[in-house]
Image (cartoon, rainbow, N blue to C red; front, side, top):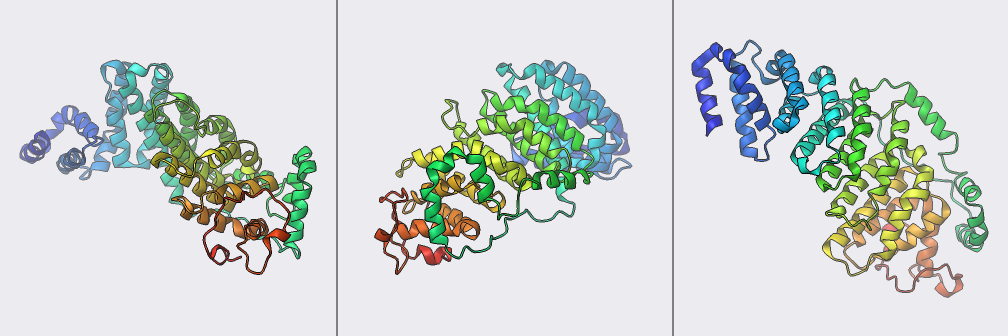
Amino acid sequence: MVLDVVSTLVPAIGPGVAYYMDTLLFPLLQTTTATSPVLRAQARRALGVLAQQQASGDVARMLQDNVDYIVEGCSQQIRSVALHPRVFGILSGAVQLVGRDILVYMDDVVEDTLDACERLVYEEDDEEVVLGALQFLEIVTRTVAADNDSRAIEEKPRLDVAVPDPDPIGSAIKELEDADAARMLDELVLADSLSAQPIDAEDEQKQQEEADDGDGPAGSPLAIKIVLSVQSFLYAESSAAQLLALNTVRNACSALRSTRDLLPLLNEVWPSLVNRLDTRRQERDAFYVTLAACDVIERVCVLGAAWMRKRVKDDLWVHFGRILRESPLSMQRSEGELVRRVLRTMSRVVESVPLDDRTAWELCVSAMRFFGGEAEPATVELLQAMVPVYGDKLWLVLAKLGCVEGVDAESIVDIGVPNSIRPPAGICGTLGL
């Protein structure tokens, strides 16, 4: 009602409404971030009417013309944020309405926000203020990432298909027979198993050298500064704060793609990110945090494939493997959603990052546990993603399960595949094996 009145009265006042800008601008900007879509629309309409009475003529230009007033006023409020808990809604609204062009004026107010976050990180009583600050920082990094995504960027890397092995069954069985010895020489096995793959030990250095040539969007330093401060909120008691921090990390990775700063930042936040994958945490809404962490992992695998090679084996599969092995086949809704998300995330992983032999075997067998259940479509999607590089392993497992026509399952040595697995009819055809 009040917003409609503002939209009606402003044209009647005409250009003289400029005298009331200090009264109208902040409340309207704050309301553009309200949870109600009706309120947001009314606030944007009121700002549009207000801009029409100014020389600027449109909302974005009006806000840019008044950016000094917005930044200075908000900085003062942030310094006494306990008295102005909704100040970050004003800043969020301004960034959303103007876009990347306003970011060049935001350095000081972002610094003030980061200082406030350092003071508030352990003060759960100020959750409204904390979430408001994190929401503003997430919007800033999202805007920087959108600027980068608008550039011409090549599609995500995919693993090349290795030269077919003339005796895939014999090779696969030999791998299993040598498994015990191989475990004693993990690094050697990893190097040998990936020797035919397009990503080798030199690729990470090459990836970094190529990134050194990228200038990146103008807001890259801002995104780095924000992530280094926000990552502490990945351990906050509030799941909402953790989700906003994860979104900020994801945005920053997108903003830094093809720049020399991406890999150092990934190395810094990786331990905190992996910790969010541990579903054994006794935290409220840990399930949703894990799903959001999977989303970030997918992004990291695309942007830093060579960097992720060893980390999939040592870090990622530790948690994902446990989830796939220990989840019951008769799952509750949340358990089923988690399993499906892990399977889909691993689909993105195998498309970009080469796996060592042991992880590939374990992933293949663990995923097949979910044939016949709600997670079967996600299982098939994962196995289809594995076929180009790991087709020989899939074929051998399916042959041992009696799914390959003309092959006697009893003639294949024991490869540790549970007899309880029941693949759907025609699975070999579905996978193109």
